[in-house]
Length: 158
Image (cartoon, rainbow, N blue to C red; front, side, top):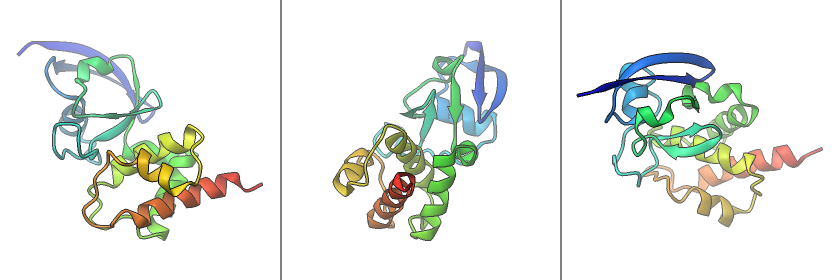
């Protein structure tokens, strides 16, 4: 299989690597870089377990090739605590018991950061709609919605 040299900034660190041209981004992150917080679920972009942030946009890591990320800034769950919204979400997920098995949590947090940074409101229906592409089999979603809404409300306080 043919390889290509890429350079990406992952969680603030510049990485240069030779990657197979057909390797998806989440596999590159997990297998080549050892950052295993982003999970591989359905491998079809449906479950949201592999959701990461690329240049501030939540994307499915299983649907993007690593070579497509060349020149991008990527944030995985391992780097979200450097972002004030990400750090607040991590605390809120613990406080609201919004993580049980934890498999969906990295994708949920990546999607929630995007929602909040885009000016999302603490409207439960809007949060639910934004997170609808992220599956959770443990929490019933209510605690996740509560956690996201609490961070939105905290940011709105003077």
